[in-house]
Image 1 (spheres, protein in one colour):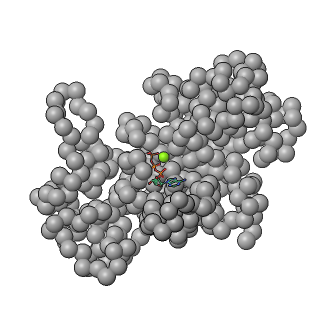
Image 2 (cartoon, rainbow, N blue to C red):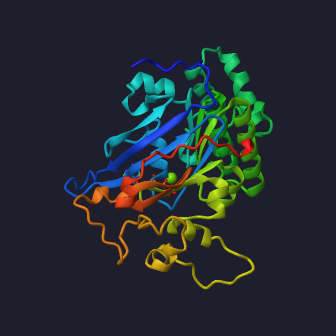
Image 3 (cartoon, rainbow, N blue to C red):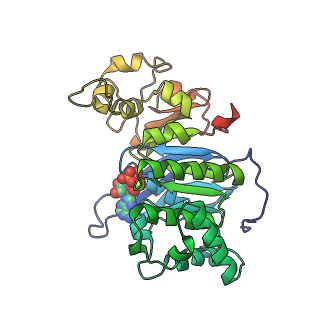
Length: 366
Ligand SMILES: Nc1ncnc2c1ncn2[C@@H]1O[C@H](COP(=O)(O)OP(=O)(O)OP(=O)(O)O)[C@@H](O)[C@H]1O
Ligand SMILES: [Mg+2]
């Protein structure tokens, strides 16, 4: 397999990342006979240059594992790639050898991790850590690396970067450490940024600044972003396309405006209903089961009348998927053009030409 040419010109209309039927499971080392946990069970998504794909879904649904797989960062064992591909510029990253993956990480794809506190080394200065990332990936001298590091720190709004370069992680607040992580990720100008809850530790003002900065950098560098977040406000403001995951699968995939206008899958609808409303008092939130178990809810949904039932780990009482292989019960169905919903496999869904979710759309295009 040929190495990726890091300097190659990127075609803005060709996908940067194509995740295809990705399946990842984890074993339990202390109990080898117990069944493996299927963390990701056939995920599909596509990211284009200058596009932000938001990945949302409840805790444990497989967002981080999907992102980490695209850099081979899933610890194996206990993790295992069970199937599928993660194509970066057309090459399957899951097949990369050690050298190829090392040159991919940081150079082409960078990740901002969910837990910045655990990702920085407490015994090295911030400057050493940012410069190490630069020296590893770029052919520059020590002093040039320092200049790039200082600029990266300025870019993410770290005040007095010359002094802060000599500080240790414990001398930084949580928000500042998060900025350091972002500076490290961006210093090598990656083509694709995997941002796993990049602003969760930050207050709203700083959060807005960081997201604004990411948007600016995205536009000047044509960077693609996978934005993993629980914050639907952040999704509404930043995403071009949204991928909703549940239980290791994609249950809805659409452009951000269509998704917010008319969420289709009961899980997505439940997610939107869980946004607190200051004007209405609710004693308790609607559960997804309540929506799923109520067939009247399906009837209201466009497209679902054709015998399509939204996929759900436990089939509702009125659905009996007549399948020999339970792994075959789910299908990601293009319910209307450029709009995908996870449904139980039915004759209608199975006879429909399948197209993997692939939306070459950015909100600035319209
Ligand atoms: N190193 C690991 N060893 C064992 N199981 C793991 C490991 N990493 C992830 N898992 C399991 O894989 C599943 C998906 O985890 P993942 O971290 O992708 O969730 P997530 O969607 O990112 O959740 P969160 O919103 O809480 O970050 C979970 O059931 C989790 O327990
Ligand atoms: Mg996570």
